[in-house]
Amino acid sequence: MANRPLARIGSRFVHLIRRHQRSAGVTAGAAVIVVGIVVVLGPLSWWVAGDTVGDLHGKDRADALNAVRQTLLAAFAGASVLLGLAYTARTYQLSRRGQVTERFSRAVGQLASDKLAERLGGVYGLEHVMTESPQEHTTVVGVLSAFIRENARRTDSPSLRTGSDEDRLPRAVPARGTEPSADIRAAVEVLARRPQRDEARRIDLRSAQLVGLSLRSFDFHAPPRLSRALLTWADLCGADLRGADLSGVILTGADLRHARLARACLDQALMADADLRGALLSDATHTGC
Image (cartoon, rainbow, N blue to C red; front, side, top):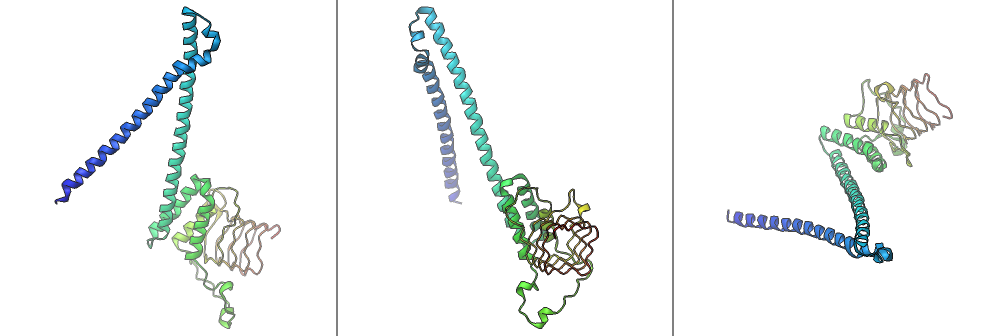
């Protein structure tokens, strides 16, 4: 209780300091403007006028000097407006950049939550950042890809096999209706509808457990696009990829048993050692596959 008066005094003191700082800033700005006007109306006007005005006398000299001053004031005002616009634009860019960074950090933090709703919010928050900020496109794609790999990793990937007889046994086909969790589905869908931009790196979904994934073209405004994605050893057993753009995708060792790939684009795809038993490939394009 005894500390409350001290806290109020401290708060009041801080308020007075801030108000004084604002007042000092306004005063300094006004002083700069006044000095600028004095310089324009005084020495600068005479320097610009030169000997031509200096050789005049009486009213002619005054009229000529006033004309020079008006021209300089107009130029000074125009320059001030341009500088103000440039400063405003720069401030806006910095503010927007700070907002994007804050939203990105908040969304990444949500991905680590143990609550599904918060993880979904993080996924869609990153989508908004990627859509609005091309500079963050690669970063967001990398974060979402890592989120999928770490939270939906295939435990029986060929890269993890020990060579035992048990590892070589054929895997059972998952029950109908099996699908990734809601947050993993959302992350893959965000990647599949990402903006069309130049990408130096492939989407890395190696060894991802994506059994029963649904990326049907008629569920999207445009065909879902995982072109050039790295899906080596991914488990896409029973996935519904009808009409999806999988051009240039690397599916080496992937499990595509009973996957529906009708009308999918598999041009230039690499599918060495992929398991396609029972897969539906009607009307799929596979030039150079």
